[in-house]
Amino acid sequence: MLKINDLFDLSHTIAGDYLAEFEFPWQALRGIKDLIIMLGKVLDRSEFDEVTHNVWIHKTASVATTAFLGAPSIIGAETEIRHCAYIRGSALVGDKCVIGNSVELKNVILFDKVQTPHYNYVGDSILGYKSHMGAGSITSNVKSDKSPVTINTDEKKIETGLKKLGAMLGDYTEIGCNTVLNPGTIIGRKSNIYPLSCVRGIIPPESIYKSGGVIIKKENR
Image (cartoon, rainbow, N blue to C red; front, side, top):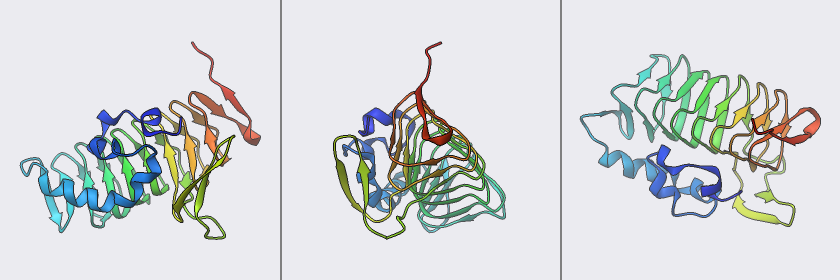
């Protein structure tokens, strides 16, 4: 469940061909900046405006005048960038997304229909199709000792070589309010995280992460 195809439907992002080059999603983080610049150069100019150097916004997107958009960035069709959103740069935001009040993005890929509506920090992360982060939930992307982030499985530790690595959220994941996703957290598709959680490691697909770190399988209905 750690591989890109386990977590994401690549048809829901213009980064699909790029992501398909890798086995694991965190391997794609180093190239996001260059990817955005490359994609920006070939965007349809009848659909996108380059509002400042290397910042492209779809003509149907809504961007608050108080929002900050750093380069390079691409904002997709019908996406809403709300009051005081802070896009630091290297942000590829898909179609019909919501980037809300005081949300900060840095070095991220957001698939289509992702919602980060209220006071979220998302850095060095990939958020899958229709994933949603509740108010105040954040991705922590640096360990306290500043050592490289590892992905911890039941069998072994996978060395990523990255000092900055946030979270990988599979398609349709739901993150509860005021949750902290620790560096290197992987959330499987269609999983839910309870509010006020502190999540570390790998959460299987179609699971519920409850208070105290208890993980249960969703019932088929």
